[in-house]
Length: 365
Image 1 (cartoon, rainbow, N blue to C red):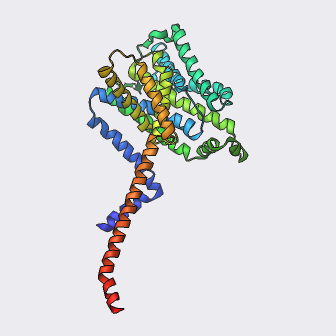
Image 2 (image 1 turned 180 degrees about the horizontal axis):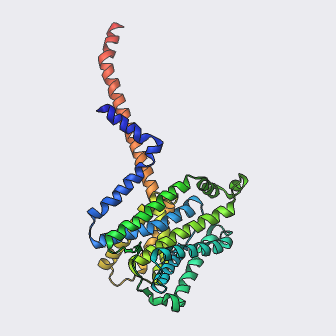
Image 3 (image 1 turned 180 degrees about the vertical axis):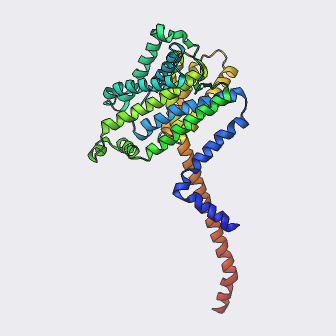
């Protein structure tokens, strides 16, 4: 029995097998969650966490691995959402085709905008991307003939695949998380590839990366477009799930929440993305309940203030993200406990050895 357990542990420790253990555990957890939280309210929030995980994965690649600031990701989320909604509700295209077209249009916009905007650095780049999100939001409000203006766009059909409509919270939960898991695995392969190493080199030093043959401008543009496509897919899933969208969903506050999700999960951590999205979505629910209970006359601006303060605290005390910092703290605690246990048993052994053999040697001497 002991040999079988040892063989199993050695098999899990093998690099080719061990890398799939987190993914299998993650998929198993996603399969079990609806059985534990099987109310429509809980399933709705779990589905939204999956949608926001897609956007957070793109931000992790762009901000965490490439080191490029972005405060306008809600703009790309809006382009995907409105693109898919308009093509299905007004032109009756199949939702999957509409989502693909919206992603292609968003990628084109990101490519055109990214060429000049990625020449900026630091807080200038952050302000540029923030302006991009504001321009998209104003365009959605003013282009009333297509987007419905501030009143929003209703009558968006549900997502369908091969003629089968995906209705209900549980089927949509599995559909969203199937897409999110696939994108997560693709992102893990990206960060382990040559392209991922180029991103880390750019984050460390653009001049050093260029000196070893990395095309800095092209790499930054590619990851900018990739993050925009992730956001566009998330927007399409959001539109077909809610069946109604309005510009207020994609304002500056939404961009701040998306950055907060990436920061909480760990900017340079792909596995931290779902945990960051879950933390911020649950935090929003807690803030809403607390405001209704203690400050019923206060508007929704308190959430933006709370998100901003939380982001500042995380950036100061946990710059690598709450998830990554938490894992490192747990590891340090285990190592400290193991050292203490080893020291205790070492002292205990020396005392016993001295009692057993030290007295005899003293008497012989």
